[in-house]
Image (cartoon, rainbow over all chains, first blue to last red; front, side):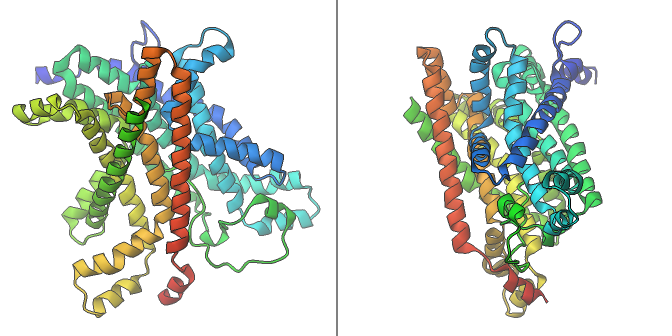
Length: 264
Length: 223
C-alpha cells in the first residue's frame, strides 16, 4: 500500500509541473494553453468564417485558402513552423510557450472559422429576409438577427472543439513544453519503476477533463436544441444568401448535416 | 530519407485506415447489439479511447505495451527494428476506431427501421442482415464524416515521429539535425501533406457522388 502511494508521489508534478520553482506545467498548462488558444483564435476564426461567406472574391479566396491549407496540415507541422519561424518574425527571442500558443491558435482558427460559417448558414434564411424587409441594413441584420442565433447554434460545437483542442495540446510536448504528456515522459524516464504510474496519471488527467467537457457538450446540445435539420441547407453559401436568389429550393436532400464540427 | 519517410507515412496511412475501419465496425456492432455486456464493453471502449489523445496511445504502445507482455515477447518486440511503425499503427488504430464506431453508429441510427423489418421478413439471418442490408447502408450514409476522419487519421500519422517511427515528419527533423536544411525539408513535407490530404478529399467527394443514397426515397419508405 505504501508502495502504491509512492508510485504516485509525483502527483504534483503532473498537475502543475515544476510550478513554484519554475514555469507552470502539467495538466494546468494543458488547460491554460487550450483556453489561450481558443480565445485568441476565436476572434481570428470568427473573422475568417464570416469573410469566407462574403460575396467578394478577393475576401473569400484568401480566407478559403487559409482554412483549407491549415486544415490539411498536421498540427505537428504547424508547431515546427512556428517553433523555427517565430523567433525570426518577432526578431529575437521567443519562448517555446509562446510558439506553442501561436501554433495552436493558428490551427484552431481554421476550425473555429468552419464552426462559425456552419453556424451562420444554419440560421434559416427567412430570418435574413424578414430582417431585410423590415428595412434593416445588411450589417444590422447580421448583428442583431443572424449572429445572436448563430452563436446559440455554435455553442455545442465550440465545447466539443474545446475538447479536441485540449487533446491536441498533448502534441506540443514535441518542442519541449512541460505539459502533462511531457511530465509523464520525464518521470517515466527518470524513474522507470514508476512508468505504469506515469502513464496511468497521464491517461486519467486527460480523461477526466475530456469526459466532463464532452458530456457538457452533449447536454448543451440537447438544451440549445435549435438544430432543426430542416433549416440547415448544405448548399447554402453566403453569396446566394446575400443576393436572395429567386428560385426556392424544396426542402429535399438536406438530411446530411452541414455542420462540420471538427471531430478530432 | 524523404522518400523513405513518404513510404512509411503511406504504409501507416493505409494500414491504420484498414485496421481502424475493421475495429470500428466490430465495435459498432457491439454497441448496437442486443446483448447488454457487449453494449457496455463497446460504450466503455469508445468513452475511454475518445477522451484520451491519440498521442498517448502511440506512446503507450511503444513504451508500456512491451512491458505488459511476458518478458521474452517484450524483449523480442523491443528488439524488432520496425517496432516503432507497428506501435504507431496500433496506437492510431485504437484511437481512430473509436471515432469510426461513433460515426457508424450515427449512420445506423439514420437507417429507417423498415429496412431491418424487410430484411427480417425476407428470411435473412442476423449475420446476413448486417452484411447485406445494414452495414452497406451505414457506410454509405456516413461516407462524408468517415472521409473527414480518414483525413484526420492521415494527419495524425505525423504524431508517430514521437516514437521515432521513420515517417515523413521524423525524416524532416533528421534532415534538419544532420544538414541544417530544415526549412526546405519541412516545406516539402508540408506540401506533401497538403497535396495528399486534398487528393483524399477529392476522392471522397467523387465517391460520395457515386454512392449517394437518395435520402428522400428512404424517407418515403419510412412513412
